[in-house]
Image (cartoon, rainbow, N blue to C red):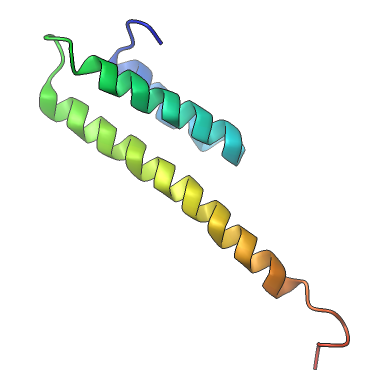
Length: 85
């Protein structure tokens, strides 16, 4: 988003919380790009920006790991009746 602010990046973090995985990742990656673009602005506090970037990166990892975990669990919970003891 052109002229994004730290508040916009924080809003994207909140928005992604309620979205399905693919949409959440799209919003979070866009927020990451916005945060990177803020580095060139003189009116942004470096420590605040770094903290928000860390939160965005952490949230991206959480969503990606949730998908990996959910994918593996599906196979374990779909046991055939023949295999059940």
